[in-house]
Length: 108
View 1 (cartoon, rainbow, N blue to C red):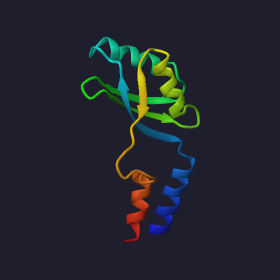
View 2 (cartoon, helix red, strand yellow; view 1 turned 180 degrees about the horizontal axis):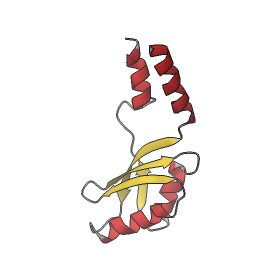
View 3 (cartoon, rainbow, N blue to C red; view 1 turned 90 degrees about the horizontal axis):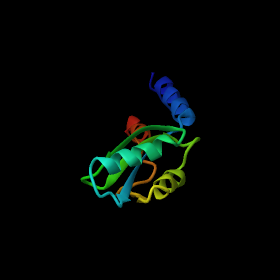
């Protein structure tokens, strides 16, 4: 049963192109207009599945299809709208996605 579950999850992981990235955003001056402007800029990109722009933390979390859009394209879209944006590195990051964590812990 574990083998079947592992195979199914592996196949899903291989064909899944969804990626979640967190960005630092600089240049937001207000909590309403700037957030709307950034959301509109991201809406122009095909492949954005969801976004959460946070004025208080000057950050945003974007879930996207990495076969259609890249981190560089997201940064460029914000730059075109006069915002500075950079990918936020997660402490201890690497290939520790929830699926990878599952596989690492599956047989332990």
